[in-house]
Amino acid sequence: MSKSFLKTIITSLCLLASVASADVLGGRKGCFLLIDLKDDRVVEQAGTDKRLPPCSTFKVAAAVMGFDTKILTKERVFHWNGVKDTRPEVNQDQTAATWMERSVIWVTQVLTQELGMKKVKAYLAKFHYGNQDFSGGLTKAWLTSSLLLDSHEQARFMSALWREKLPVSAQAQKQTKEILVVQTSGKSRLSGKTGSGTWEGTDLGRYVGVLQCPQGEYLVVLDFQGACKGPGGMVARQMAMDHLHQKGMW
Image 1 (cartoon, helix red, strand yellow):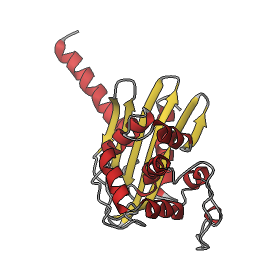
Image 2 (image 1 turned 180 degrees about the vertical axis):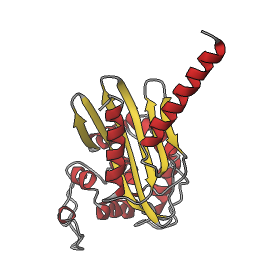
Image 3 (image 1 turned 90 degrees about the horizontal axis):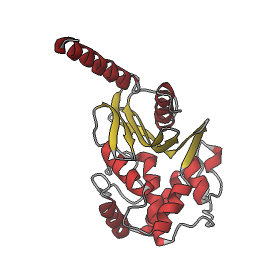
Image 4 (image 1 turned 90 degrees about the vertical axis):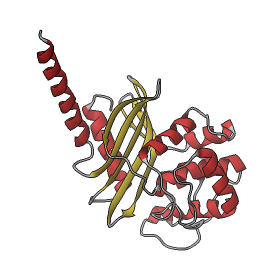
């Protein structure tokens, strides 16, 4: 086999891989990362990375802060403030687990206000969490406001949490991992968090999670901007799961 022919085959395979990767984003602007946690190797990357609001993926960082300061416990009940949301499941008392599962914004706002600006900013600096800008305020900085982070920063934070390498108590990290939202398929398990919003005039969807499957453990990050039906975060998670299914990992 000639070198030129071999080079042509390799180039063609690379182009096919690139096309397959791009498909995960459904033609939208965004970024997809699949990282092998065994050696931090980027198995697959698609799109262009940019800093975006974390939206409800920030709940993961907020949970670490809350558990570390012990203002958040598994037993604590957050009493509904009476402000009605369009989602009935939000209009009731919540626990740490239901806060994460139902993605309840008002519980996050209770936690950030109890933590206070000084502590929140100190934790963001410890976590190297994006631009660390909470100038948008304790109740909305992460909600399409001042706090921004890109997909690689999201991945680094989740990797440190999963390995319990964040500069906080090991217990706080264990408790946070225990309340991540879990999806299962066969022998595969995906633990993570969605984030939805609007940014720069279009829908924003974010997902960050850890995939445990027969092939190993992988970080999965998908962020996109573009019109979609339903909450962007749910769409982002489904896009990631569909792609993982195509790869035989889900």
